[in-house]
Image 1 (spheres, one colour):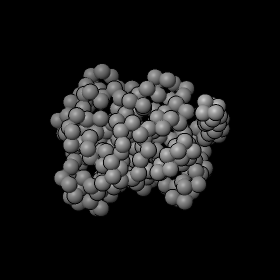
Image 2 (cartoon, rainbow, N blue to C red; image 1 turned 30 degrees about the vertical axis):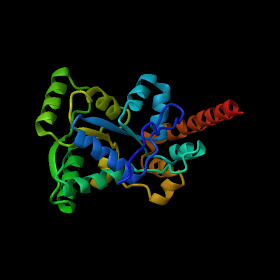
Image 3 (cartoon, rainbow, N blue to C red; image 1 turned 180 degrees about the horizontal axis):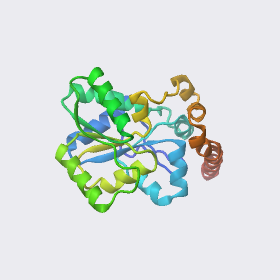
Length: 257
């Protein structure tokens, strides 16, 4: 498997995502699993970049991840413009599916935290059908509210007892990134904030065609699927993101000249 070079991160407004390929991302995650010290992985999108820009403390949490995967073509384009020609997009759902397959073939266990109970149930049904050898050590659909300290302590203890090697997080951005950062030192599982991938894998939300994603238009497809929930994210944050990218690139050009 490919490996990710150390310090191979490129600034995109507020974040420093890694330059990755599908294979190098898997290799890094497997490396973290074998180290048995936990860790967490974020998937950078325009939404996450803007959340990080508007909330610097949140940005520190994302940039503190063991791996920041480029799950958005605008992020990849920014890396390429800055000289990283090997930069590529790695979709969270694609990586989750590959890691489930890898886990089933290599005696690793997984867990799923987040989402509605019916989504968790559908994930288990599909996984059992597609990957009968997959070990699902832990699942939980937590309350859609802030946990009490006692609840959080009990959930943390349950995860540590179950010991999933890889824990997929489906809480959505920024909640899952905040949770992973807060629990990095408390868990040995490698956590991946895959968000909507739970719904995609369960089959209750349609995923954007890959060709639209390559054009950087996945946001438009998702907007048509969930306009009430996503209109602000895409129609307000996207233009701001483009402006901030332009400011960054102009600044870099002036610095070099």
